[in-house]
Image 1 (cartoon, rainbow, N blue to C red):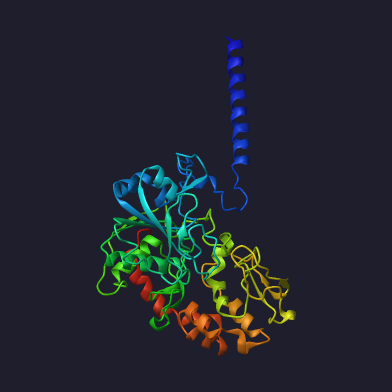
Image 2: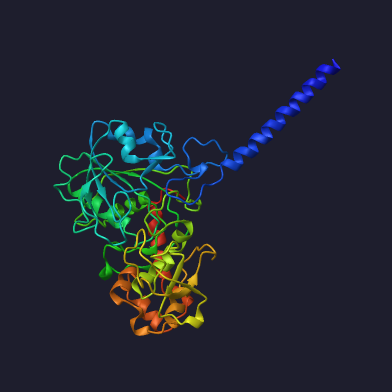
Length: 424
């Protein structure tokens, strides 16, 4: 009997040791892979059994939307971020939505491509041409060229349009402008829109100047703050609810919401949403450093640290401790100050932001050796959505004084926004 008890005890200890060893090995090999477009975090994979559930994007909820697409002619608005994580058919890290739907015998007629193109390789602002997808043979219709809105001809015989693009929650990031024009065209042609929602990595705050109607452009269509705190699905609700489509139009919209998600849920994008937003840090700094697009300052384009550094040959060298030289690269064929030494700041180790940081912009202006040319007034105004910000900086207002002029509009927007929220 003693022998049996000892044997059982030894066996039990041996099994426990194996379990601990297995857990250590599993943890070691399940660490996040290096920052690359084709890797995702373990807790972002569909079917994960960890106790803390990660956000489950709309595209992953195939059973919820597949019946809405069967026996219909479908058009899809998508880019490289339109993926289903760890699709059960291929067992890859992820599969593109288009490839997945084709495998389910969904009749996809065409793809509409936003800024940067269907595969996300074009420079910011670069015209995207119509074409054909090499992998699937599907026709690609550009929505970032001379036609930013689907024409009635391109929507002929289409029964439903699927919109699935990862946004970053900033007004001058053009995917919400594409959403507006897609909804408008579909409303005019009485075609429903299915939105597969995704988290907004900048949803944890609302800040910035509100767009003034006279400064509307493709960098800002609606009167919203620079950082709006909405997902694509919520934004579509607001576009309809506020009658922003014009002429009394309403678009029939169905949203497949993100599961396990609130506006304060941290979300690390597994695929860069555009060529010059390579990681979480760049996405967090983008609302603040995006203002530099309308100035003489380079915000890291032409480097591997886009929107994590800034600099210019015109900044006073004695005021800044960082220097770099922009060169043509992926996403920036002709970067600002190409081949010139730029003096500025490296912000890669800065704290994560929950508000727009105006100090860097104001300091750069104050330390510029050519203040007369610092602002490209037209470009800066359409990025800011107002002429006031440039005037305030030139008049020497502090960040706190400038922000105080935003507060009334921000409070009004927050109240208006509440009606359209899907997530708390």
